[in-house]
Image (cartoon, rainbow, N blue to C red; front, side, top):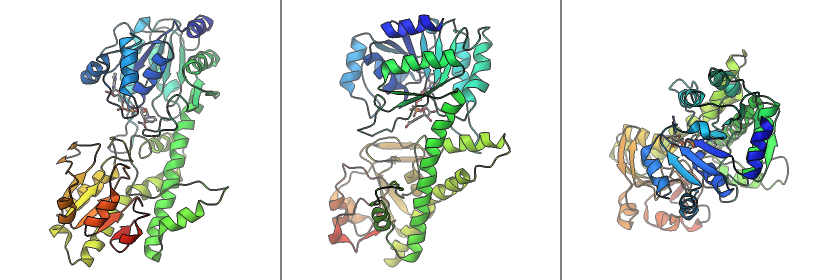
Length: 435
Ligand SMILES: NC(=O)c1ccc[n+]([C@@H]2O[C@H](COP(=O)([O-])OP(=O)(O)OC[C@H]3O[C@@H](n4cnc5c(N)ncnc54)[C@H](O)[C@@H]3O)[C@@H](O)[C@H]2O)c1
């Protein structure tokens, strides 16, 4: 049976489904269509479905012309439900995997989609989970649900995990040229998944199980979380020692071996780094194992907005201003530069903390014109000269490259730069305080 699927893959006659057309699913659906497959996206958000079917883009890294070309050629379309899914040969799942308030994995989206698929499953299909999750999700959670259809995994249908590693905003490494790790619940599943991903993307990296593939991804994100926490801790120590952490790190990173660059900031954000390591932490408990680095990194990184607030207080205090009588502009709301994704963004926490202190807080983000979430209802303030002169402090929270920082430091009375974007603006050194 696996050979039939592989033949279809080779001839590109296999029909592909992608469930969840967000930051991960849409770029992959587009790549699969560009590789020559007929692709159907299943997306529960009707607005997104409408846009795709009109060839309109809503994800930063995608060129609308590419999307429109695949839609008008008939290779890519979207729908809100699972009708016709039994006709697909490959189904890729890229739905959210959040945490609940107690940092416990919330697999409701994965489970819901798997149940829907179980109702449409037919022999010979390949199902591949791309959502980031703890080791065991594919085998322990998805496989029993899919097998409730009466079909057996790795024999009647194929089941794999292939974590997505996309780095939104990264111009060099994108879905197509980032090596794809693939693990199956058995040898046939691995073979089918390798054949499929190898036919769409530049390179594939097989591992021996779906569980190993799941751990690869959460390890990668844990590696980042821990190293960011380490440099954040250095920033706290340098603050006490009166040293410039950026100078220290830049010098350290000139070493050509044994070190790699990570930079401090107001905290970590996005759908990955703040969340995924806790998936692993949660699962490790089942093995009576405490992942101490994960807990500590989470603690250090989550405390960074508080440090930004404290540093802002100090700057205001020097000017004889109480936080409750100050007007502060937070520059950048997205969790990282040049994208519009604000999920888990530390800038939001900084705004909330400062508002709780009674400060009047505005934000400017060229990518986020309005922000109505997390109990806030704000509009991006135009970055006009008068505004920069009128505020008491500008806090640079995101290093967007399309902001004129020279003008910001020239006009604003004081600047707290949490990203070191003012590095080369030496003439204003007295005005700028670095994290
Ligand atoms: N964003 C990243 O940088 C990134 C990178 C690597 C891995 N991941 C992982 O990929 C997964 C998806 O993340 P994302 O950033 O693409 O999320 P996203 O929120 O951008 O996209 C998920 C999409 O799934 C849709 N969806 C939810 N439930 C659905 C359902 N039942 N049926 C159909 N569609 C449904 C949502 O409407 C949304 O459009 C997560 O597990 C995440 O951790 C994300």
